[in-house]
Structure formats: C-alpha cells, structure tokens
Length: 43
Image 1 (cartoon, rainbow, N blue to C red):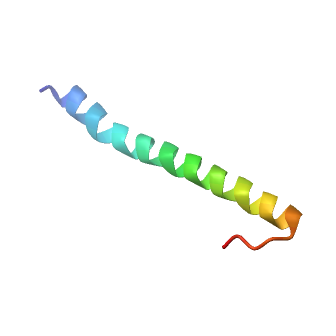
Image 2: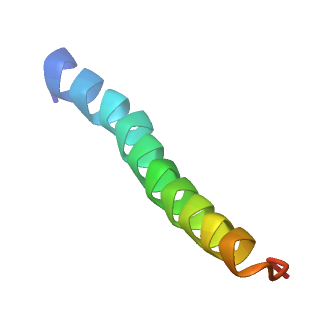
C-alpha cells in the first residue's frame, strides 16, 4: 500500500467520527429545544 493511500485511510476516520458526532449533537439539540418549548424535561 502506498504512503498516500495509507495516509488517506488514516485521515478519513476522524472525518467520519466528526460527521457522526455532528449528526448526534444536532439531533440532541433539536430534541432539547423541542422539550424546552413544550416545558417538559428531557429525561
């Protein structure tokens, strides 16, 4: 495996993890704001 492809493979994982984290955080904050508007606790 060439150094370029190995580097691309290693650097791809933080991007994927950041995307998943952003997706989860966006969903969490959307639910949190909706619960605050309704006056209900999150849990």
